[in-house]
Amino acid sequence: MIHFIIRLTIASCVVFSISARPAQSAITPQLIQRCKSATVYISDSDRLASGSGVCIDTRGYFATNAHVVDAIDGKILVTVNPGESSYKQYEATVVARSAKDDLAILFVENAAQLTALELPDDVGVTEGQEVIALGFPFGSGLATDGSDELSVSVNVARVSALHSESGGVQQIEFDSQLNPGNSGGPVVNLDGQIIGIAQSILIFVSEKETKNLGVNFAVATRRLQALMTRPEIVVSRVQTPYLDTPLEIDFKFKQPAQPALFTGNFVN
Image 1 (spheres, rainbow, N blue to C red):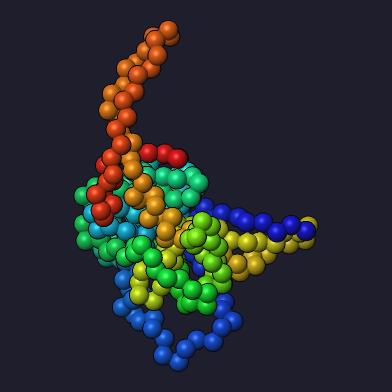
Image 2 (image 1 turned 180 degrees about the vertical axis):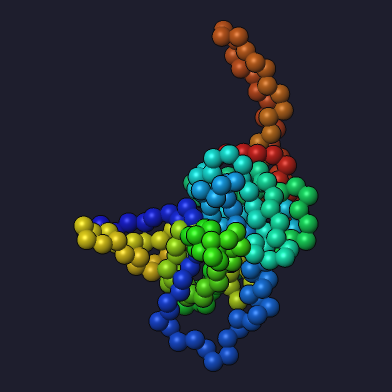
């Protein structure tokens, strides 16, 4: 018998919580609508590889998992408000990526009327806290009657544990059942602030069955903030050498302005 973590290359959360809900929930239709509007579908042109993402800046910046974009061969497409009359699809470029953190930032040019969720430096996440996870379970597989009209899945869960390193939360564990398609989708608090990016699940595998254990993980917001504020490296001059000539490269280090203004690419 084996227990292991599986990444969600295509995902969202179906929640079965054993905790009692408060009589007066702070989850309002307005909160849900705002979170749904910021959640986007990320795919290739044929939807053979897909995942979820979230708008973090109305100028056209989106966060997702690195493993979501790595699975896409060719153009990366970001679909905003799928299934709605305001549906739009854009081609995106990867402007920042960290394999170690399993995070990527995408940029879309000329995007209009985007809804972004707040990405604070410290959201003060606690065990037992109620959160909302959004995304697209099974990609386009759950589209109504096989059409192209996708719907954002909205699921309520509770934080089970906080996994820390070097004095800060790095990974958030919560009690719902993620499915392929929700990787890269936002996990938010009841103020609509992003606390993490959905990443992986714990499953049980034996010779007879494979079972989702309902233990799920999100990359903490602090890791996304660190990726966004990391000094970028700009290659300002490259001289192509002959075989016996050393390659000369001048590096210039630049700290981007806040909020995130991604002006160059780097890869971890």
